[in-house]
Length: 468
Image 1 (cartoon, rainbow, N blue to C red):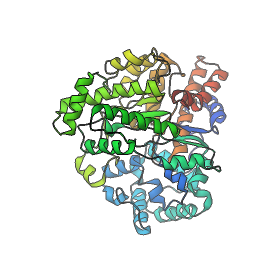
Image 2 (cartoon, rainbow, N blue to C red):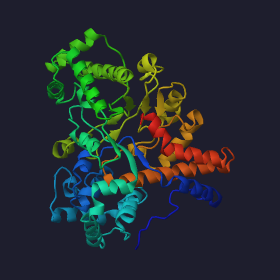
Image 3 (tube, one colour):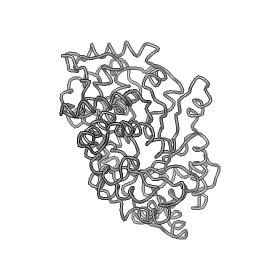
Image 4 (cartoon, rainbow, N blue to C red):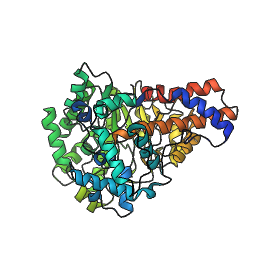
């Protein structure tokens, strides 16, 4: 059966409200995409090589897809995870696995995102199933052989104006420089400073990471002061290459301060392998405070999305590596955790802090009130496990009554799956327009006000929150 996405998908069911939502959606549907937080590799665009196959493009990098298939009994190895390049036989088999298990995605945003990608990018409208697996694979593969389906051509077709990547502090950022220096390239592809692994002395590999940091920065990191200088130097390197934000994710967002003597001692002990778990946790919490201090000085927006237990299943981590679908949310607490940071920097000129969460109980209780007082704080859009229709609607109702619309970040797609970017942003625009249409129907907003807000959520809000 055909699987063409419905033109009114995600809009309100009430016909009167839906008519208003349609009008609002038409006004923002074609606006450029501003993507301030994602995980697409800049080398994809710098090199502009053809995508190798449908599985490598649409399945393997998308943990939203692979994790649910894994839950349904499909080993990650059968989905190409951790295998590098696939030959044609392997890629076709990965695609068959998705098609054979397609019914497990019913009711999830993954299904609507993939259907939108297939129909609107590749012209494939057959519903995925074991019967259509080979035909749909062949149709997509044929498109990928055409010049119009190379990364840069699709980037322009998607209407992306700004794309932020996520990058290791030791990255030389040559792909970003190549794009910036290319006269044929007009869009902005910006690096994002992601220092998590350098702030966690309790993690395996931390010592090697900070030694590498010293090599890349040319600064001796055998002592705490040199370590701080090296981090600051790499931040400047990122700013020189266009970065506007630094991205942070830890098990909790606590920012408890230590004295320099304490941090120096823990740093030395951690390098020697003597620091306790309590000491390494205290060091990381202090360093999050230091990251805020650096953001006040160099202007990088600080984005924080804590409370996720990374790599929950150790055997999967060992076999397939990180970012393979088994990061699981934790409960979050922001009010007391961030108080030391906000006491120092919450009203500092130029400091900006965007707070994301996968614990939606804190939307109205903590994040919205913080954003409703501190001029530095923005309420980050629903992210990761919450970037789904019903969770987005709950966010809209939980946050807007406290902070309005201007103190929210705009949508972040947070994706490694390049072709899902337009589908995810389109979902957000439809949901925003549906919510605004309800406010118009309830006479809480005039139609012209709703239209202004709809456009600002797409363009002005992410530019303001991320200093774009």
